[in-house]
Length: 253
Image (cartoon, rainbow, N blue to C red):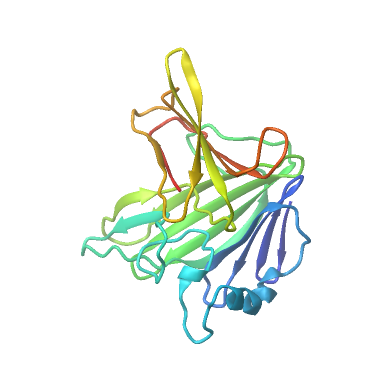
């Protein structure tokens, strides 16, 4: 189910919560992804959050926030989830929340295979916009009451009167709480499919897991796990991410 309390948007699965809130500047901030939490207005803890992260109330810097869909040129040091360039060579993008809605069923994917549900799924649609450049990003989140799965996709829309070059666009971007994480992925070859690779994630380390062959396959499976160091097959916290469609893909951690 999906609930909205004040400026908080709460996606609730069987045992999980995915929580976002909209700041007073209309930035879309990710608050939590993990075990199920109480359904309250989490935007009310903004002052405490800023204090813990060393944020000065008179200086606005997005670097201290867990942005839901970060972009280049906005006082942020993250790898952007989207990279564009307009006809003037401007690559700076400022995405603010324009609107959001919740509807029954799954996200519409015209002309592509899609999930389906027997009216037991709900979808959140959030529209982010940059009025100056003329770009909108539609973020879709589908959640099911009986599963610990959130299906996501992003749609990039050119609202300007000229062409825009889309250099990169990721399905999602997520910040996890600081911890000792390892990234688990599966490379392979013929007769050696899905060979498990488990690598520690260190501060400043970029793990680029990609497949450029045009389709998914055993060379690099389109699935990764980010797990805490002591997590095994039976105990511990792990986050799984899987691409549904076969194509070139990349995961930057």
